[in-house]
Each structure stands twice: as C-alpha cells, then as structure tokens.
Length: 411
Image (cartoon, rainbow, N blue to C red; front, side, top):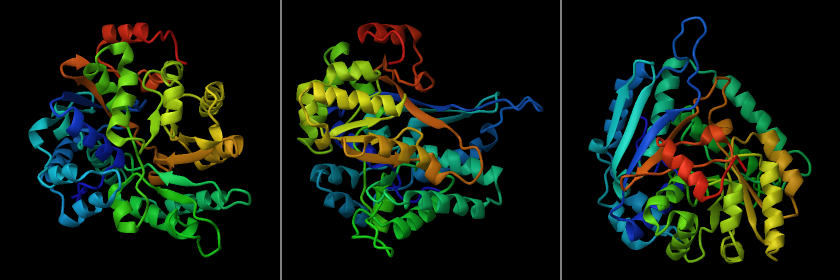
C-alpha cells in the first residue's frame, strides 16, 4: 500500500479545501490526468511510458486510498496550524475519499485515462496521492532494482552546491510529492536534507550553518519529521473561479478577494500564471500588492518574471524588499542558485524544488499532471506562460478566454 495516510499530500490541498467548505460547498468539478511526456519508442512503436499495463495495480492502490480516514493525531496536528479552522478539522474527522468519483481506464495507446468527477469538496484530495501512486507503481515495475547509490550521489552533489560559501541565506523547500520516485525515497531525501542542511526550525546544523531547508509541502512528513508545512493555493482554485465568480473577466480578482476573505491576510502568496503574467499584473493592483505577501512563479522565464514583479512593485510604490517571490517551476539546484544570485537583497526569496529532489536517480521522470477541466458544468482552463502547460478540452472556450483577458501570445 503506497499511501497510508491522508496527510500524505500537499498543504495547499487543505488550505484550498477549507476555502471550498466555507465558500463553495456545492461546486461540482471534473479533473483529468495527463502524461506530458508519453513519447514513442522508435524501435517498438509503443508508448515509452506506457501505463496501461499497470492500470489494475493503480486501481488497487486507489481502492486502498479510499479506505483511509484521518487519525486523531493527524487531526490534532492540523488543528495546531494557525490558519486551519476548527470546523474544517471537524469535517475532516468524518471525511473519506469515495471510489465512485474516480475512474481509471487503460487506453489502446498504452496510456491510461483517469477522470475524477464529483463535488469539489469530496474530490479535491484525490490529485496528489493519485499522482504519487501512478509514479510509484510505474517506477517499481520499470526499475525493480533502483540505483539508490546514484540517487544518493546526486543528492550529495546538490547539498554540496547549496553549502558553498555565500549561499547560507539560500533556503529551499521540498515540493516533490506528486512526482516522487517512491514514498520511501521521498522520506530518505527529506531526512538527509534536514540533517545536513538544517531546517527552518533549527538554529543550524553540525557545521554551524543556518538552516537551509525551509520546509516541505508534504503535510505527513512535516508532522513526522518536525518540518514546516508550506503551501497556499494551486491553479485549480483560480480555474474554478472562472465558473464560480460573477463575471469571467473578474474571475482572477474574485479568486484573490475570496482567498483574502478566508485567510484575512494569512497565506498571502498569489499564483501568477493561470492567465499569463501580463493578465496577472493587470489585476494585481496596488490593493493586492499591499494585501498579499508576494507571488509564486510556475511557468515561463523565471528571471524575466522576477524582474517584472520587482518593476510592478516599484510602479505601485511598494518596496519589493518586503515581498516574497517564490520560484517553483522545474527547479534544479544550479538554477536555484542562479535565481538567488540575481534577486538576493532585492526582495525576499523562496524556492520550491520538486521532481529534481524526489525523483533524480538517473531515470527519466514522468511529467504527470491532474488538472481541473470543468466546474459546475462549464469548461475551465489554465493559460500558462509555458504553452505546453495549457490544459483545456474546449478550444472555443480557450479562444474566448484569450479574448476576454486580451491574451494573444504567451506573456
């Protein structure tokens, strides 16, 4: 059994779920799975990352997932987080994922189709554990004797790069649950990083260095390893507001205002790439510049994005040194160091590294996603600064969305 706790997911699933409980409890949604790197083997002509052969195994793991409920200690941990409200924890005490809302189909192409359809409140927790299940099932079949020695060598190299002179203020976080090689490897990586880099909750490590591991998005490991849980909102929250808000053009503004209503200034990091950077900056006015603590980058050129954010704060007479820029798109440690060196001292910085931390053993990782495609029967979409990340089933709606937000090309 791969997933043994409903806490084995990203924190932003709980922060969004709380907002759904309080503000959108009747919303109906649909999510779909996509493998962004299927590829075709030139010799066999088959999909290089065929998942259909493992469909039954994936279904069995999902069935086990749906048998879980929150334990008392897990609920007590969630209740201890300052931004989690008691009525939400009470709801989670009664919560279980329901297998009737998810369907896994093996396709003739060798891939799988996963469709999640039902009440948003009762389906929102499927995404991260299901992606983790797909990855672990695939890799435990494809790599029956994983090269852990190579994985540890690569992890050692990352740590040595982060501990170079002049980088003691550079802090990273683990964002790698959904695409990890395995749960066991994920835990080993976090234990090694915690011991050798120090954490945000410790004064330093054996070398006297300030802690460089800021925390993890994974709530289970945050609880069991004593790390800081990190996360705010994801793309699905802003996408759903396309159907839930009063007017499509104002849906991004509506999403940020609804978030502020829920958290009253806490968890103040805005996601910037659901409609592209230019549309984000048009909506992220002086009010939001002051209200939110910062913004998160997740597509497009991160260096250009950072410069545009700093210029936007200056234009709105807000000191960017009081704001946090979070970088989280396909980061590696060398790229993280480059970004740190360009922006240090000009703003507050945070870096979330995912796949490159938790699935770097020398094998090509799966670029799997599960994205919301409908809400209340209406298509919803993400218009990313990286076109390959766009996901929408309705071309007419996508064209309309581009027109409404005045998006003619990637920002």
